[in-house]
Amino acid sequence: MSASWSDRLAARLYAAATGAEARAYGLRERRVAVGDATLAVLDGGPRDAPVVVLLHGYSADRVVWVRFARHLLRDHRVVVPELAGHGASGFAAGADYSAAAQADRVATLLDRLGVERAHVAGNSMGGFVAATLAVAHPQRVRSLLLSDAVGVASPEPSDAELELRAGRNPFLLDDVDDFADFYAMTMARPPFLPAFLRSAVATHHVSRRDQLEEIFAGFHGVGTLDDRLPEITVPTLVMWGDQDRLVHVSTARTWADGVPGAEIVVYPGIGHMPMLEVPRRSAADYRAFLERVNASGLRTGTGARSPAPRAAVLRRAAGSPGRSRTYVASPDSKSGGPCRQTNRG
Image 1 (cartoon, rainbow, N blue to C red):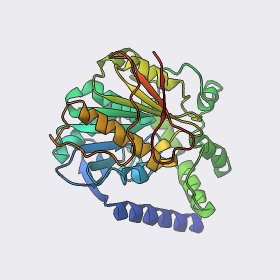
Image 2 (cartoon, rainbow, N blue to C red):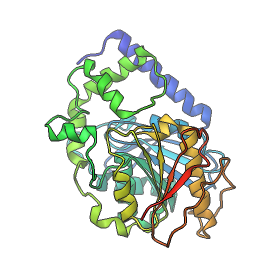
Image 3 (cartoon, one colour):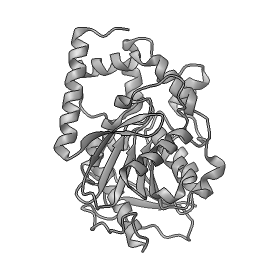
């Protein structure tokens, strides 16, 4: 479908606004060749600080991490790539869009940036890529944040999974009029977006239907990690919104039960993208996790230690080594802590 002049104008305004916001936080765009693709990357923070890599999900782009990233930039170098097939990194028909291929590209990106090891965070498909990176390239990953991640079996089906079972992929839209229902599935508390900008986003999404279909076929159900979770030996935080309609919150238990010692934080009333719905709160919880990783006596990839996080450190749940630790964010918590903990085997 062809975009109207108003949608084209709105798309330019959206790109300008999101780019300006990223620059205001100290993130700068660069292009990095990683073999079969050239990735558009946001990069900011002290160059000698511990490195955090943030990976977006399917059909999304780096914008979803920007407001989360701002809370890390004081004492971390933050790298936010757009994965192959997405955003300004562009789509190439016939490319390999599996999680394994995307993980290999991320490893090459680290090589190009001169980064030996990094804390790696991923949302949805990006979580699948992050976990695959930890399995395939364990020496490159210092810790994992898996937010509403696909890549393992879900004990209970989400709304999206039920639609897939009925033969309809909710991501693949033929008409912009269908976008509102899809958008409502992605977040329970979406940030404000004016109607004319949302219209431009809808038009762009629908225009990419064939591309998104190819990307989906490349990663969905391909190289899943259920049987390989014990191979993930780095500290891992599983983060989820309990109103996630794309990947059911029960999936968090699959990750946490499979990854030794994993922790969980669950946000009541939040959907598929906590880092975008509650960026300050989720970033504070992530900073607290990184502080616990550093306090464990294990060193970061750069040999530096992060100062104490601004938000209160989550209370540690009692339990034997290897047992998952679950934290449930208090509904009235606005800055990431403290959270109510529960002990679950």
